[in-house]
Length: 338
Image (cartoon, rainbow, N blue to C red; front, side, top):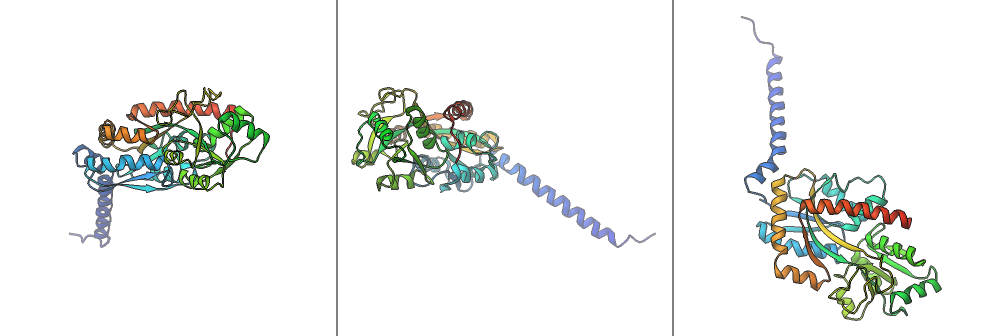
């Protein structure tokens, strides 16, 4: 009987190692789905990545949903602010994250449906790289100016801007943001030249507006309400067809003479593409229940926003319609990324 070659044990060891590696890969691949199916998700803290700095509406929306969602899931939902890149820093991070439900994103509509239309060669795709979970808040925008600016209506602002071309400036939460596109749309409609000053989020933009470094901004009501009530900012118009109940003395866009200045922001939660359906279903189901509570709806109204829930299918359809709508606006207004 011949003796086995000495190299055969080494070959068997290598085969065993390969089989073990493949088994580990398979286990990792199917683990999220298995956890979702057996109802154990989540078993550890969930990270909610926010595409804007603290203080803005995106951040407020994230924190509004994170606290009650933590209680509903039985695990902490930790807010992680990742501003910058027109929402791209947060989006790229979440797009590359493991699709297991432990890394989510709270995204601002301006970043999700406008940035992709303005910025070429993005490292993320708003449709292919994400699984819609739920829309959280929706809100019209409000144009506000520093109180020392000698204007008290949109008509007066336009007249002042025309009399002082290139002397007024406006803050936005970033180049390509909805605030940017909205004000450039106003520039196109009114024939004004108000200069854009981009910031990394609404919070920093508000700081400079309140400090008088910039003249005006168009943004959602939540970060504005306290400052308006205190007389630190003067609202001129709400960018919607009707007045906002929380700002009943501020005219709507049609009342101010600009019926086509109809702009609403929305703030939605997304998971990485490929996240198991049971995980998404659990998340959106819990969010739906939270948003039906009087406490959540009342808090949204106090901020000047609306608790407007959309399930994954509805959010996907709405997102598609928004991409098409803003593509037309950007083309007609000839807006380009700087």
